Length: 98
Image (cartoon, rainbow, N blue to C red; front, side, top):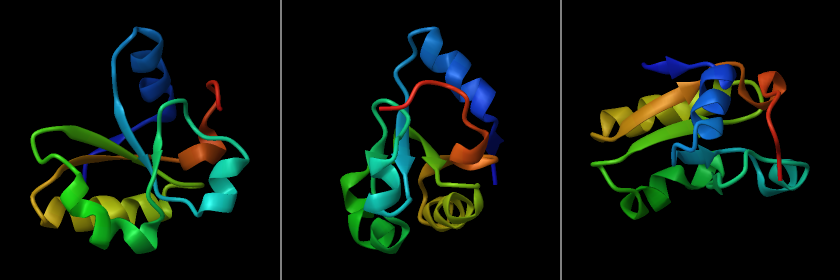
């Protein structure tokens, strides 16, 4: 499983790169703040929403601490998607939130 640090994600966003970020936390958790532009697909719905994702794109998976996003990353990877887990999750995120 590929991983990326929150600092690397923040740096890429600050450089103007357009990233496809999927936040797998529950809706209530996301309301407290998410990475700007991140799409919320709770972990329990990833299996049912995977057809909405483009296999040619790279997705960065995010959750609170990196555990749920790790499970989502492993699952989507097994289905042929290009996904990276953000290690440490939102607990380690120091960038802007919306």
